[in-house]
Length: 234
Image: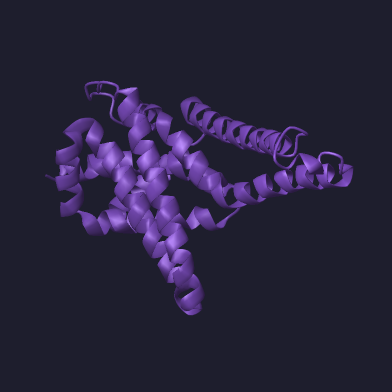
């Protein structure tokens, strides 16, 4: 394990958070996330309106104005509740669509002699982002049962699980740009301890409301530095 490398990478990433491209990625991710939740709310209202229209099989409810109001309010509450639990993972998935921009900004500032890397195909980026979103949501839902069964162990389960997932994802992202998928996997397996501890560091902001929104950007920047540090030692 290389604690010095982890801390150096982390503080370099923190120092660059004001970078224009970092902010652009953050706002694009948040904007797309808010747009999705607004669309979900409107879609739910449309569906409820369709089900309770005079021509539907629930048409007998169309004259109940109080019920229409209650359903409308319920759709808003459901959307708000979902946003509390899904805001960070959904924003992370959207933000990860643009994380190449973060890695490019890091390399241009700190590793200017490196040759540019080709842009990944959009289909691959979308597929990887959706896969990561699915894994992190499913894993945390499964972990919720463990939190209930073993409350004292909940913090250890939360940080251990998310530290592993975040470290694995963001290191793979950083290394894959230069080494390809197989090369990134081999380097990650050879440095599992360092990557896991760095992932734990990325998991800490997740417990602070809304601060978790910067985790994808901070993670991509930190692990870009970690990748270059580990690659230089090979």
